[in-house]
Length: 305
Image 1: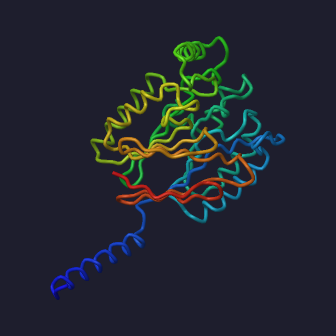
Image 2 (image 1 turned 90 degrees about the vertical axis):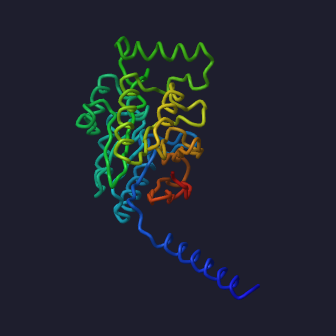
Image 3 (image 1 turned 180 degrees about the horizontal axis):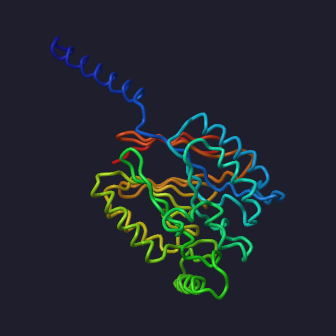
């Protein structure tokens, strides 16, 4: 090797080392905590679900997240397992978070006593966000965060005989007639008004050159028996926006990860499952997203567009 080539190779190696060191020490643009499927209930374990243990797991997660000081925390739905009184136990624990913290509606959150169904939004403080529709958005440091309500269409969220229940039953019947795998009563969907709102919200994010992350209780990709009823409609909207970099969800307790057309689909593991907790702190960088998993939750570093 000539002296010139040796010098060039050494210089390139030094630059690579410096870039790596910079990447390791650079502070994230922001970080946020994320929890899925606490599903607390004062009930004995059933199979792999340890309902009472979720209380202590949530307390431990809140303590850990307070030490991490994220910009905000999101719980991805199914905070309880169907008994409205369970909110009195876990909501005060969740409210111990020092960071702003948000709720996403899950199917178990709304599968409460019929006379209490209309009180769920108020109990979670969602009546003050997004005109009380259960879906809303907020911004931090050039990022747009969008919360969807997958119980917008649902046979569990509305009383029998109500117009909302009837409309949801028609959608589910059509899905079942087509043989769709996700045609189950424990899934839900987004009504047309919410789909249009999602389009408008992403269009504003595009115009403002924001990056966007979407939160929903239900997965949309890959297709399976746990996805939103209209998962394809949601994916189509997400993929028309250059802003969207990730979609976070719960519902499928075993968790998972997939990517499609530049969008990361991250399914958090359910906190209620097994003998160990699960939650994460997500760090957002200019060109990557680092998911720091706790307990059973996996850690990942993902490149973002």
